Length: 166
Image (cartoon, one colour):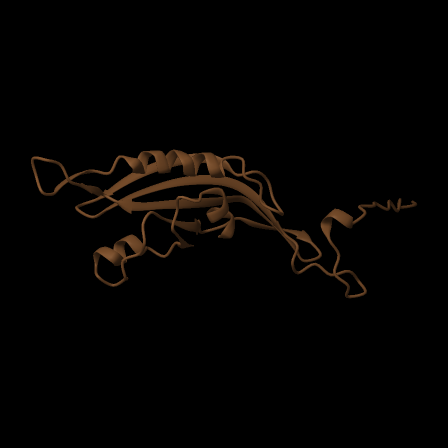
């Protein structure tokens, strides 16, 4: 999640997605500092075994949730206070796309943009989602025959062919 803060500094709150928008509106979750981004790894995931404890998640869908205030408050000469639609959220949405399009996971492929959706939450919050697709190789449970950790980058791939004599 620190990557999200580094690549997208306008965001003041980053966390794992857990339906926070619905819980805020229902009064079950404390209001958060905005704008906020939540990261969701979409389930179910397709996991294939590559052997020796190595798994590949292909495809792996990552959904980013951008949450911001629906209104901006402003003051002018004619009125003490008025409300207008928060249009800065569109700039934030574009910055989120730029920050994550083609970002590369440490053990996977580049993240590629897939879809976007806007959910206007009445009276209080804007909620945008952007979905990305990638692959991820999990080699954290990999061990050699001697019980030592090995890394995919250092492994030698060999093939031995034993012909059958008839």
